[in-house]
Length: 104
Image 1 (cartoon, rainbow, N blue to C red):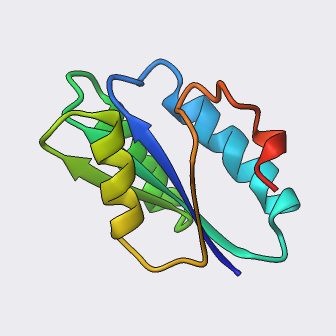
Image 2 (cartoon, rainbow, N blue to C red):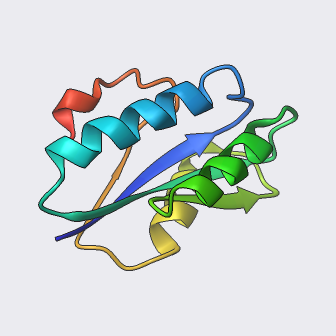
């Protein structure tokens, strides 16, 4: 099963690297039987969110950066979901307010 996990991000430089690394480690185990990846939909951040995610995307192919010039959480999620075909689409906030243990 192919799973696209959208993470909308606006000015998340304080948490994005730590939380993406946490997701990568957790999903490597909990979603090991699936083809999964994370699309970070960065929408017009004023900080270094875009640069941090771009660096992580170079390190791990399961992280993809989608840079948007418009703001809006709903728009970011929709654009991330439209960026590729998947069997399952979900989203989670960059601050991991919904615990990642619920993803599987």
